[in-house]
Amino acid sequence: MNYPPEHVAAFVESLTNEMLTFCGPIFITPGLMTYPNQMIDNGTFSLIDTGERRLLITCHHVWQAYLDCRTKNPDAILGINLGDGDASIAFAFPGRQLIEADPDLDLAVFDFEPGQIRVNGVPVKHQKDWFPARQCPIPKIGEGQYVALMGFPGKRITKEGMLCTFSTQVLPLKVSGVGRKQLYILNEGENAEVLNDIKSWLGGLSGSPAYALGEDGASLIGFVKSGHKPSEDAGSHDSIFSGSLSLTHACFLRRDGTLDRAG
Figure 1 (cartoon, one colour):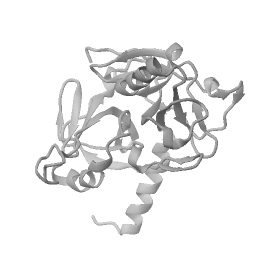
Figure 2 (figure 1 turned 60 degrees about the horizontal axis):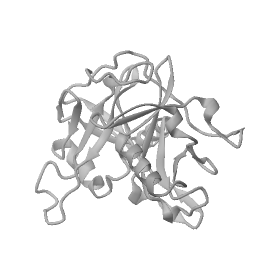
Figure 3 (figure 1 turned 90 degrees about the horizontal axis):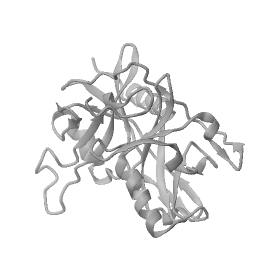
Figure 4 (figure 1 turned 45 degrees about the vertical axis):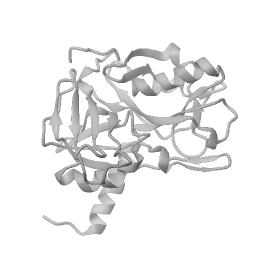
């Protein structure tokens, strides 16, 4: 069945707004009082409620980039954006809230309760919530199934003076293959139109949550691990890997926030 373009656009906007509640940008800056143009790197975080614990999850390589910056500059901060206005805050003492980090799975999991969202002891007004992922273990998704993901690409960040605006939208994609640790979304078939549009700005999607959409609503299935950028000397259609994505299965996440490497 074909739907009018305006109906599709309205659905995408509605879905984007709903999914935006459960994720946001995470970024590294040289210090607290710095301009957006001084941002060193950025990725995406997910907020997950397992029923036992509320968590913030991003990629291990995002966490490692922050640690590397701290070795050179002790003032470097890990920042998170929780919505519009003044909702960008420093992640205070993230090492104390780190539950587990695994470079192989490329996941870093932090304890992150609502009461921890404060600046100088004052609660921050924010627009976020924790996505309920209470089935344990979280089921894997199969090849050929559809997912929706969203992240915050660095190339789509608008930086004007002290103002910084992060942009995102939902990306509907089809799973091309499934491995024990990862699932793959290749630049082929139905994915080609979406991935060809985004392949030049994959940076910043790291840590993006991915959901399967069913009759019972959305279910968490994974986190974006990496994107394969096209080589500068290759044509835009030379390879199905150009602009493709790999995701870590969400099944490795336990209720207490630790990681089950056996999956």
